Length: 333
Picture 1 (cartoon, rainbow, N blue to C red):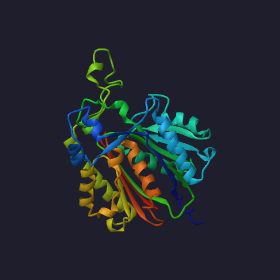
Picture 2: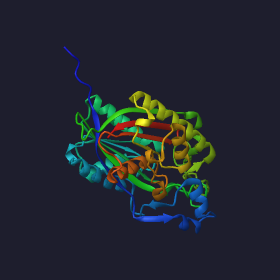
Picture 3: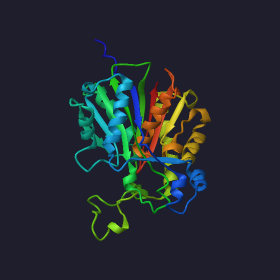
Picture 4: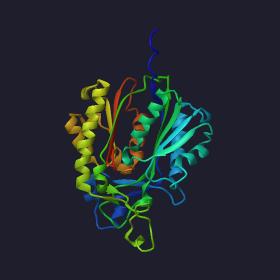
């Protein structure tokens, strides 16, 4: 008896949501000692979106999820697994995914969060892929969602210019190929020896917030920018090569590369190392800044809706985040 054919997993819908409030570089000039030219030259960011005071991460995620489900033509009761990648959950527990399950009416779905910082969305894609390949799930909602404005120190000009809020989502399904979509390969990695260069040090069990330390704002983002830049370029470039080797695809065969939207200089450096042309890269960070786990998900949805992807295209997704974590995925569109 021959072996059964391998299970195919595919992306069948995309969606995203960014809040209405826009904070431009000119707005930030009024808060800290910086300039639009300085921010644009060093990061490529022109503006970012900030959630309203009453908007939680789960609210952003739920809107993106509904849009992805509409794009896929999937109803809430068909979703059997929800994975949300976030480092800005509504609260420590329950999982933000539980709130989203309730908000979108997906009562049949198992729901949980993962925390892998800016790489989280791609970590979640691999978990969804494995769940479907094992037969445990059929239709999975994968979401990257962040309300990072909650954790920004608006007096720290090195970090407050970088981050924004938003959410992106995809619907994945096993045993179905819509217009050729399928996940071909993934590559994940972690280096826990460099946890100190990008972190929110306070608010957890290691450094609880107290009346004595709250004025030091330990529950805001801390980053060693130059070291993060160096580590990001090296790790992301290496992960891209590994994912392409697993997929049996060359750089020349890539139609589009969507890298984590953190810094244009990082994206340009990776493109140079891989020998990519300008038309092979997708950039939207000038509009949204760094939305951590949401960034690739938002960019993927925009590329999809702007017609940048055609059936049969080879797509490479790559991210890097605190941890340190990194991840890549090769997808047939």
